[in-house]
Each structure stands twice: as structure tokens, then as C-alpha cells.
Image 1 (cartoon, one colour):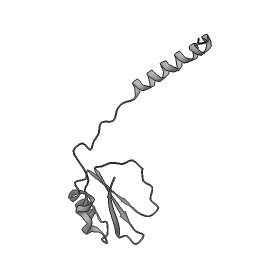
Image 2 (cartoon, helix red, strand yellow; image 1 turned 180 degrees about the vertical axis):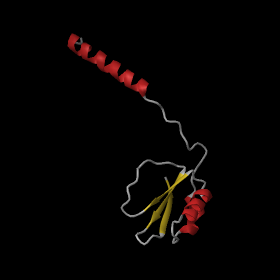
Image 3 (spheres, one colour; image 1 turned 60 degrees about the horizontal axis):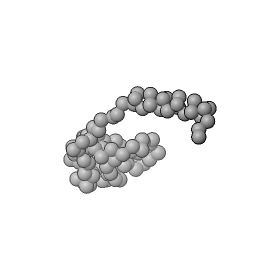
Length: 100
């Protein structure tokens, strides 16, 4: 049988958990029906990631967003199927394209 002390502690903890979960707002998916296709822009490897090239890559890969990642740059680790990542080397040339 449970002791009265453990029940007195369990109830507030459970109530707090319910209150916190009620405050959480679900984030609607922004990438429904949109999937990146990195292969569509393989032509860009070796080129400079200027604004026109990045926009063409984004459009041709059917991505909603793009980001240029240089060596040592910080990037979030979240995976987004509607984003194209453009990897650039220290000389400023595109070395790879990947979705995420």
C-alpha cells in the first residue's frame, strides 16, 4: 500500500506535468508535400554560391529554404526535408548539396 507522503508528492507532480503539457503549442509542419531533391542541382558543384546561384539551386531542388554552410560555420541540427544545404569549401566553391 502507498504511503500518504508519496501520494501527497505524486499528485502535485502529476498536476504540474498536465499543466505544462497544456501550455505546449504544437508546431504545424511547414514542409507538407514539399521534398528537397539535391540531385537536381549537381551542376552547381564547383561554382561560387552567389545569390543567383543559391536561388536557382533552391528553386530547382524544390526547396522552401536554403542555407550556405562554410567550414566552421554553426548550424542547427534539425532535419527539414524542405531545405537544401549548400556546403562550401574555404576557397568559396560549392562542394556538396544535401537536403535537411
